[in-house]
Length: 215
Image (tube, rainbow, N blue to C red; front, side, top):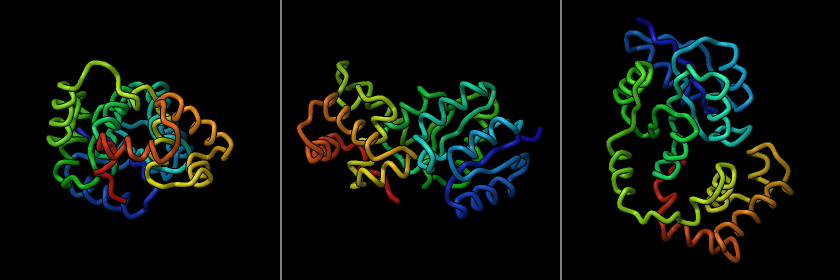
């Protein structure tokens, strides 16, 4: 049985690599590719496939929002997140939005093949390192931490602010106005009860939220 796969990533080199890995493994066919949020949604709507390999950091909109919309519109399409975001909090949000698997981009090619195969068969996939993080999170206090109160879009803005991106850069990346991003920033500060952006950065460092991200 052939597994039909869609690839969504804004880097052509990554798409080439994924196509090469799956093309050299038996039983896979690349049914289409997309490079940003709108084209990914259009591809998912128009193409019958078994699995979508989805990057969460493409231009156009929040990756988590995109994931949820695709899953709402195409519930039978299995979604494997392939991302640079290695933190447990981001993975948890992805699964809540409808992902069936979560893999970081430093994973070996054999793990990608195994993940796509398992997700296509109806299973869930998470790397061993991420599974350990989920297990560790079970020992955390039941009371929600401040960042867990954020919506997916607010969390995305929070992450980008902590990465040093400007309000205008974030707006451009998410295809909204700088004024809208300023509103989201204000909401993040209010929900997390932080006085300013520097406090957000210190919070992220203290809780080791984004320390494993790399390019």
